[in-house]
Length: 118
Image 1 (cartoon, rainbow, N blue to C red):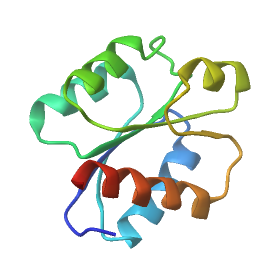
Image 2: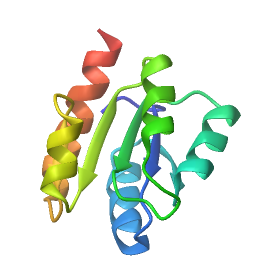
Image 3: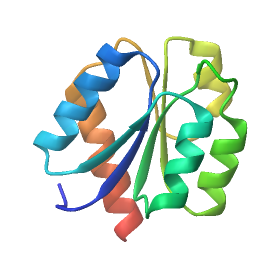
């Protein structure tokens, strides 16, 4: 993967967030992890984001404002959720249903970053 790319990870389950962060950092990506919508919006103010990985079920409400902000900024989003209905509503963007394999997520990240660069 491309070194130095910045990933915004929005996941409120700490065990899942830690697993994803570890895998992304091992792939030479910089990760900012947030547990909710407002924290993610704040993180976007602090620096450029190349890709967002977003849980669609967050403690501070639905991520609609965040998704709109990411789209306005042309930042690709990979949605993750244990709720198939939420994922279906997010389509046609890339999605992964929990539980998922880390390799599947890394493949989506690689593809999204390549598409964003091209």
